[in-house]
Length: 354
Image (cartoon, rainbow, N blue to C red; front, side, top):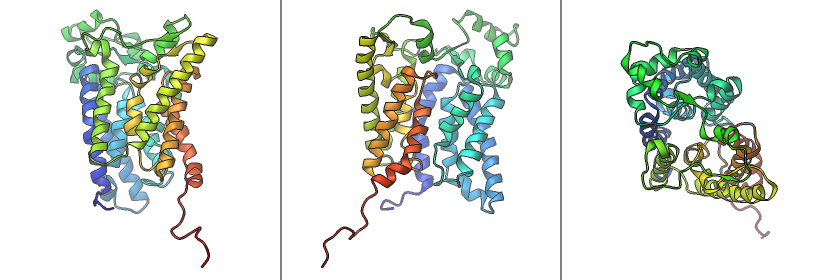
């Protein structure tokens, strides 16, 4: 209110802050994200306009605030880039219609729509959600715009049976030479490949050569950090939530590692919890959502700490490899209680009688 920042400006700045992550994502995984953003933006805009029409409100005013675009970008960054298009559109439909507008629209939704749409797909089509392209700078050539579109239009069962559509295409033949077209996320490999007890490292100790192939996840996390610091520096988000979330993830990981070494179960290196999965995306772009966050500074700190704690717990003991989306929605469910417990006093209340 003091700086005169509109909802449209705030959402625009979030989109600008997401650009580094979008660029790194495309370089690492190919052009699938660009197509997903294109199709999801069109489909979600049609859904949004239809809902506003049903509610007898102006569709133009609803689309102009850019909140829908932020939801679409976060959602598309979270899902595998070559998920079948019908699945992708189904997830964003769930996010827009049920999670956002069924609760009353912008400013009224209890849960983060992008993360709810991601979880909807993770529960509905878990096999398809487990496939990610191996990060490589070659993916810009291999998964070019034409082939990326073909991948999106294929059904998941077709993708699993044959990765090459046209064997006469020299570009597509290069896929045969790669280690594998899709594979489970590193956090999923953690559950499948390591059978010894102790702390597992994902980031190579040799940092003499940092590349997409060897440090793809860490580079993407750095892009999210850059965008998040930009939002903090420009005053569009507060540092409290990212700080308490990161501290909570690190300290919970440290404690779990100590317990794991003593009682014999696999854990992730505590500092690497910060650079694998969607930790940094969650720290700066998911938990800072003003609609689904507590209203007070103390409430924001408490909510961020709870989400960080659940992130590590679910990663270590849960059935799903990454946990930001689940932890964020759990944190969202605590927010009404947090707002009530930490509600500031009304001005003049609690004073001595005259």
